[in-house]
Length: 168
Image 1 (cartoon, rainbow, N blue to C red):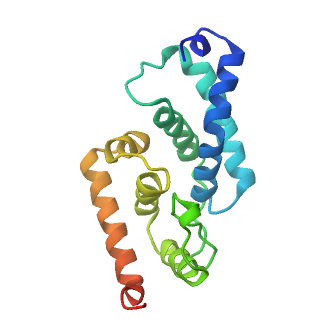
Image 2: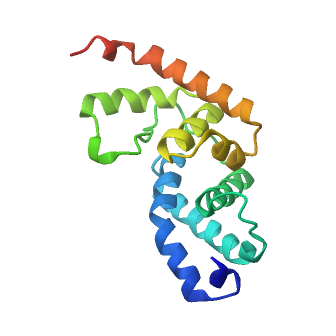
């Protein structure tokens, strides 16, 4: 970090290499599978990180700070929210424990019914594995707001997926 903040491009390239997979995957989910848009946002976040790295105070993990930079680029462009029938992306942070195809289809459909704030809270806390306080920092929300949005999202998903509770 210190070398990258001092302008060492090789050190920054190491940071990019370590975090680009995470950021591209998260943004791909946020962009509902539009990987081109996600890649553009990731590139913008890394460019902003390079420029702002000397001011990075270390109050959050680098990954959290980078996610916040990506989300600020996303907020600046504010594209229209896709229609509810468009394909959503999965939330699972553990792809090697992926559920059955039917479960994924139902989960993805349920995710399309969430309001954008609920969806972002869910993606950051469960998809990106950020703590509640880290997710609130990324979104620029008070911690209570993040927790409220997360509770609403989970309640909506629970209601829509309750058929799976009784399925063997």
